[in-house]
Amino acid sequence: MGVCAIYEHFSGFELFRLPNIVHALPHAGNANCWTANTNEAHGDKMNIIEDRPTTEEFIGLITDVGWDKYTNLKVLDQALKNSLYCVVARNNNGEAVGMGRLVGDGVRSVYFQDIIIKKKHQRQGIGSKIMDKLFDWINANCPNKTYLHLFTDKTTAGFYARYGFSGPESPFFGMSQKKFSKKLGKLKK
Ligand SMILES: CC(C)(COP(=O)(O)OP(=O)(O)OC[C@H]1O[C@@H](n2cnc3c(N)ncnc32)[C@H](O)[C@@H]1OP(=O)(O)O)[C@@H](O)C(=O)NCCC(=O)NCCS
Image (cartoon, rainbow, N blue to C red; front, side, top):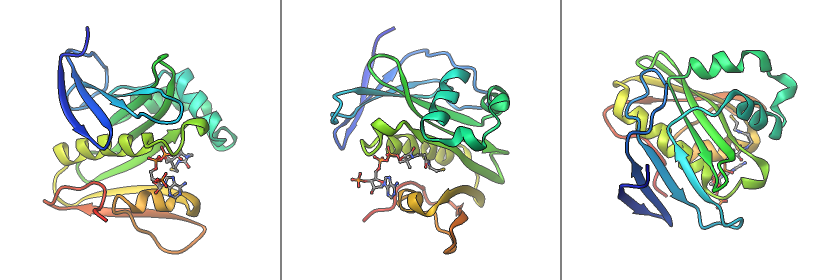
């Protein structure tokens, strides 16, 4: 099925709502699919889709950013299935170039897991689009006082600070924030 409606325009991204896209995520909110046109260096039109990557694609993403060294690749199929919510970014060719997912109980604790953009597609705004989608889901589904967690290192802490995360100064630390009634997402400059 094709694009049925232009939904929103902002920041150079064109978002479209696609009808009746089936995905098997449990408790994943609506099953709509979204298209983001990055207009970026590689000229790829990126589709930010509420869906899981395949397990092979997940391994490919993890390997691309060098996390395969400390990841148990055998559990990734189950890990994907246990996601609360997952989005995958695909380019024009259907290649999975990025992903992000949420895990947890969805009401007291939600963890940002596997926010990954392939190296050659980084700094094109794709990670931000994925974060926006994750926060859309949180804003729509999580009650007040839900704890939001993630682990990162200092080199990428700035990316998450833009979304309100904060953490102590140490080489490797957790970052968290609480959701109250106010909508969350990227902090205004
Ligand atoms: C971190 C990551 C998810 C960011 O995704 P991205 O698509 O490259 O980020 P965006 O293009 O949306 O970045 C938007 C802004 O966030 C900030 N930002 C992005 N990456 C950053 C980084 N590594 N450090 C600090 N700020 C960063 C910048 O302000 C950037 O704007 P700019 O490009 O105009 O300077 C991606 O680089 C990645 O997958 N890295 C490897 C895996 C990883 O480390 N994941 C996070 C740990 S859990």
